[in-house]
Image 1: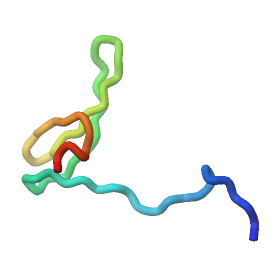
Image 2 (image 1 turned 90 degrees about the vertical axis):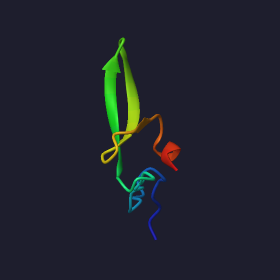
Image 3 (image 1 turned 90 degrees about the horizontal axis):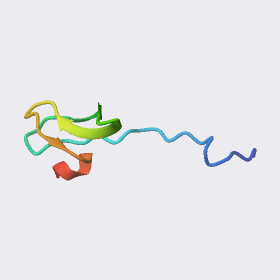
Length: 56
C-alpha cells in the first residue's frame, strides 16, 4: 500500500450548523478598519455570532 501524507488525505463530508430557529448557519467575511472579520450568520433569523458553534 502506498504511503500518503496527512495533507493529501481527503476528508469527505462537511460540518452543517443549524440555528435554534431552524435556519442554516453560513460564514461571511467583512473587511472593516483594514482587517478581515469572519462572522457566522443565520439566513432565517439574521442573527450574527463570531463562530458557528455559538448558535447552539
